[in-house]
Image 1: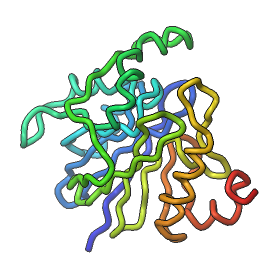
Image 2: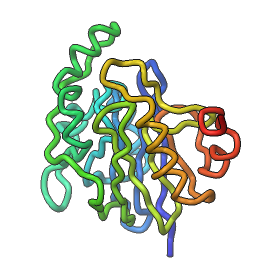
Image 3: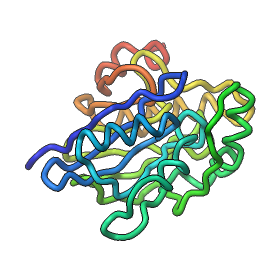
Image 4: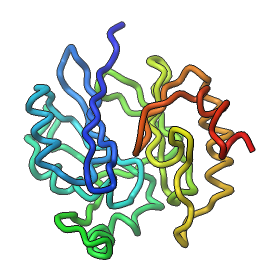
Length: 219
């Protein structure tokens, strides 16, 4: 079985890992968390020769979702129709409705509010890019944060839940630190030590590496 391909485009001043997941046979795929710098994302898609079927969002923070509306408008229709923004969980709608305001407070421009075409819930699956992505709800960093898990190819797109040597920040008023750690322990660590994690910032790691060495999980 051929493995799907994953490209990372680092975007925004906070160096967010926008991801392009695609099937190398069909050259169709999805863009995950286009936080900004949409021309760079479009350029990478053109260089790769990848057509986009959907835009997936893990959560509603500006560095993950601030470019979604612009990218949706710029992409040509997929075979099934206009490219849709899918996710996150509906509990992050209040963030998606204030992206431009969030950006202004950080001195950033060019980010738009976005209304997803479809929200997601835990237990759903998405058949995209030659993959079967399972949806997990892992709140704490934001109320509606999702993780996308591919069990056959053994990887997870974890957004800002789990990082190489760290976890997502929980100092915003709507955050819940204990819920985040509980979700990581009960849902992400349960995926298996061999599963690669692709976080929203920083380097790729594995569940096993984080189980053994992440100070937020070993104390």
